[in-house]
Amino acid sequence: MADIADSVHLAAIRRGRRLEYLTIAWNSAEAAVALIAGLLAGSIALVGFGLDSVIEVSSGAIVLWRLFADNERAERIALKIVGASFLALAAYVTFDSIKTLWLWEAPERSLPGIILAAVSLVVMPLLARAKRRVAAGIGSRALHADSRQTDLCAYLSAILLGGLLMNALLGWWWADPVAGLVMTPIIANEGRKALSGESCGCGTTCG
Image 1 (cartoon, helix red, strand yellow):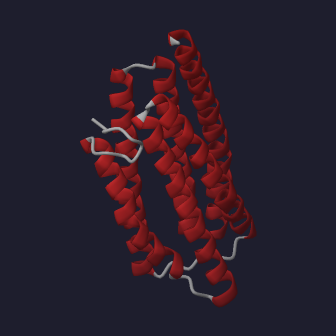
Image 2 (cartoon, rainbow, N blue to C red):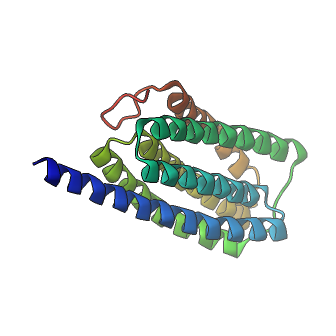
């Protein structure tokens, strides 16, 4: 029975690694497209989304390291780094949203940005769900926290898509930064829970 359990655990670890490789590859491409499109259109929202993707790449790399190390010390370190990534993202979104509103920075229309946000809105929830299944199977709080960050990427994709469409169709340039401010407490709370070791909803206590 122990051999079977070990085999199942190793299979789940390998699946988790594949998911993190996919996360890193997808978010690297996402970051490149968002940053280039954002700079060309003058879209603070798109640039912020690209920087979020950079944070996702860093988080994925940390969790991938944890899956190779596969021990409690690596788990704790990875969880704290993922939590810090949440807080860094919350700080950036807050600053960027307030700055955009204060300076009335209206972006140009961006078709590549709209396409990117729409595709990400489909891909990210599927990836997050797969991560949570693996996290539950191996009891990894860090991987579960990383899945929540992937969920937030999907939420930000929805916010970005709504903002870009409202700007393109209605001229409501302010819609995206306002939505970003609404998301900030949710992002910060996930970071706080990861850093403090509170329950992260995966059937274990994060500590």
